[in-house]
Image 1 (spheres, rainbow, N blue to C red):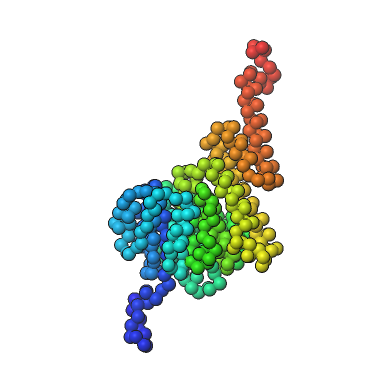
Image 2: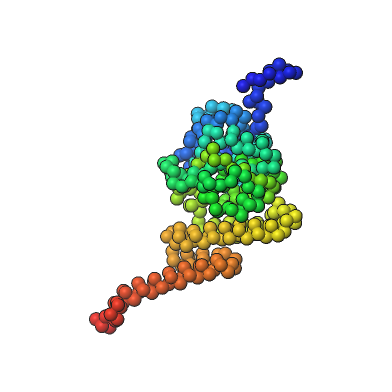
Length: 346
């Protein structure tokens, strides 16, 4: 769009808009890459730097898809061998040149006004460090399963948002629009080998930098699948990531800087985040992994956390009922019913 300029005659207003970097990391599965590319191509915001990055040793397949389905200029990079997820993601942060930055995983999509709507919030409110959209959780076919709450404030202080982490129905913070300079200055993704909590860590540090803006007028659609990276992660990897995340809350330089300024507030925030992390591990251990693991391995996995009184109280209760259930089954197999011992088995 051209607009008059007193000194130069005409200027391109689109070119004057701030550059936004969207990073599209790809691993082995390519089945949803086209959908992700199309959702970026359909953005109504004109000044986007797309970086497509192949971390799965896919030959020319990823670039071929991007060439075919993304009509705008873009940057392509490819690792010669697969790197751990946090290292790959930090490569993309380092490569970003836009003022604002967002990841979009290969199997997720964003609404056509996602970038323009969140850029508006960041442009209008310099104290906002990160902007979020409405979130819809969809199944592999794209059918909406759940959504974040429509009844929430349009603005939070960073600490208030961290305290309300699980209150409004967000299930993934993989795609948010943050200020690139803050993300780079705070070191990007911590090294959690399995990749769990890395998105959370970025958001936490952005929230300690400034306010959070929320728009209900645009959407991030997060695709839930049992074979996606997070849900296919082995229990031992989730345990290691959780332990590292708990240490991160005590050791990360960006967090320590905030703690030095606001010790009481950080102690309160940390309490909420600490419980969120170990409770996530507990829920998956008690449900998902119980179905996937041999009984002895599953029991050992229950003791993978550092000592946390509430956590081990819940684990003990689950193990007690598991043992009780086993005992009842054994008794029934021996022929003991409600009327006592069946003498025929003696």
